[in-house]
Image 1 (cartoon, rainbow, N blue to C red):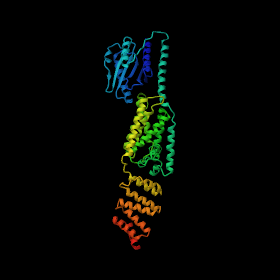
Image 2: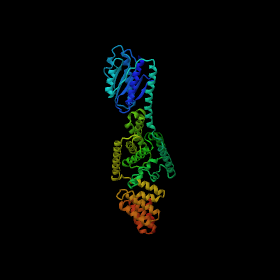
Image 3: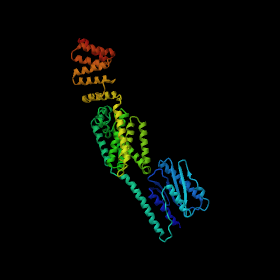
Image 4: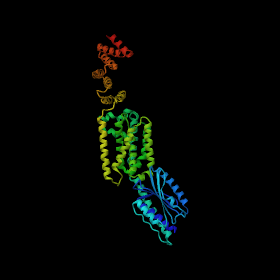
Length: 509
């Protein structure tokens, strides 16, 4: 008779598999199985147990053990609450008063477990109750005794396990929908660009970074829109390159295989753009790196978790959420990390994944809505970024211009100085640097004009008077040179350089 109820146990397992449940645990002796729904995350976990118990206390002890075990599983799956249907398949019920143990559910703060004991005398009644809970009819039968029953059972078991294996294989193929092509292209690009930066001034040189496309707000405001994308392949120093390359090497293939190569390309580039856009909105510093795009890969995995939570939390979910949390916390604690770019990339990757969805799957309304929503949000962010008053970056621009001047890159310096507006409080310093450039180019007339412009903006700018004195002295106009030197010394009485110049001019006069 026992083998006939083994058939009942395996029939129930098979019907649940056909109802889009999947096996999450099968005991070594195959007499206990846990199944969860592949369609509905809130659907109850089903525990089937093929056992024969003589006493109710054994049933109670097993129920307590099961309650602890499923609660641990709930925590690993990040489930706030868990409903459990716990079914014992027995030939005969325990001989004592066992019913009191299953009258009410066993519960903890987070787990609600309803237990059913199915045996020879109540099988159809329990099946009716379970069918009501699952909203789908469950039908099993007790086979007749037969000399071939053991062999038939083994054949049926193999059929059920093969069916479950095919379901598992179909699930596994979700992570193998493409090959990691573009991941390695981007890794190669960022390594090549790192050496190019090193050979042309250094990857930590701000001027070099700007020259090769780093995110720099003033130049974006001047129309250099490509700076939303070019920072993706630029890195500041070897450690920055190593960390991002390491992250991309492990994360990129997973996302590219999950979504396919061209969907990955769209996700990666859009996430990189979104990271640069967020940095443009919330940070005025020069920035570069693949971090926004890499966080976009995390965003794409979060979308996978939203679309297929049962697979996500059973496979990569815990690791993904933990790593995201660690990286965001690290960015908040460690200075000079562009958190706006990281968060922007994370959101961008999530939205991009919503748009492309998965290969050979379509959620047309959801995808169109995601595309429309993303386009509207992107346009609003761009409008805000280009219409709001620019952040005061005059000090940074002046410092970069001085670096260009030190390297005799006068054209680059002048182009940089054009980013400072005439009404800016630091505009007089920009005029002074322009004058210095023209002095180096021996264009003294324009140099004098720029010095006068600087004095007009700030009549207490003693360096401008000093250089005017030098220019007039060069032209042998010693009277005007003396006047300018006197004004410089009046503003800075203790400056020995000014004192010497004035003395020399008085002697010449």
